[in-house]
Image 1: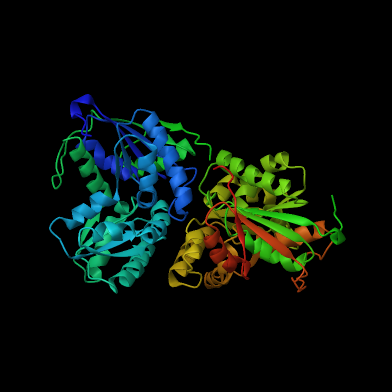
Image 2: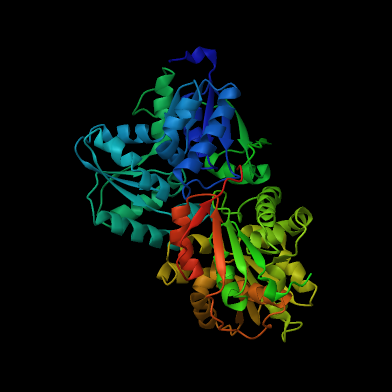
Length: 277
Length: 277
């Protein structure tokens, strides 16, 4: 399944919205020679409050689109779709598929065997227990905490705001009643934008847990697939060779505007895509 | 267009999710002899962050379903769909259509001519300026304030919570810098669940504005259409004759569970509906 980097692979990145752009952002410097196709199913976001059947149906349509448009590998940069629809996505396409859960849990496992982790995620992700099961396979005990207000707070732009810190204090206090984690997994691609506030709140509550961001873990596992980089080393390779195209199922103007905050660079053009929804 | 109440009209009520059940709740005692069809397009909620084209496409599909299933009149119990898609909905069906905006603005107009109103709503509703225009037609000056965190807070169940009061204080302080309203319109069907906190916050900030709830205004206008009740009188008619069926495009269990909080009574059965999205 390994593709030579010299072939300039095309990597498809899929999310329900903008959050997966944090994964694309982590991929660009790690695999700079690749071409990226990013699809945000913004007409039907958020997935986090929807049922398994609906999420699987939506995710499969997007996965097929990316595979049909030349992707050599698919990154499911959406925790909810990874948690609830990986078997359906893998069955629907014939290219390798990497989700965001296994890389983050593997990162937590490295050097922290048999300890406890806390997973912060959307309601659909926590209810699926996908993180719990991935942790159990590595003898990690996981406590999953649904944090439904964090995505709206990030989307409101309140990333450094007293209300966000209050909400984090409430969520994290509740979670820390049930565990003393050595790692906290950010199980939603919006959460890296408030990782600073999450870390500060953990310290205030007396926890020294390390924060593990699924965007970086997933980018590293994808790079390993292509024989580049390795876990634990953050490269600072220039991104000048990497090219990307973005597709969105709703307003392309909004995607370009909000998405650039997640990607950390301007998005010059977004294609409008009708998946029939 | 007036239908005799003795014919037991069928009234279709449409919303993107659960919020429109506050309109159904207000309708049941006002038109107790009717049969109600409620459709929540939960697979594609929320509409508030989506584009006009996408909202219109979704709303028209739902409106057609209700018209095809025997509705004599359609209540668009969704502010976003009313604000952005009324012309498309009216063109798609041959039955009368009542939205939530005109009734609320008419209620604000009664006795308060030429004064100022503050409209609290989702981002899509405020950006459409549908309330502003409906107010301008009645010589009411309107200030529209987007409150994107209120729906997630209500859905988190934080209806009487310090964080919700903090968020309201921030939103209302910002809004009151631009106006001194005599009425505050709740331009989203989730907001009646926190009308108590909204009123308390207004008083704390020195405003004596009256709160106008579009659910009640819309139910009253619908009752007037059927020749029942009148604006300004809240009837306490028994609801024992009223029957309703609920349709949802995503998890029917979740609809029954969360929806009952909005409807104020149990929802015994929900039909799963595939609109092809």
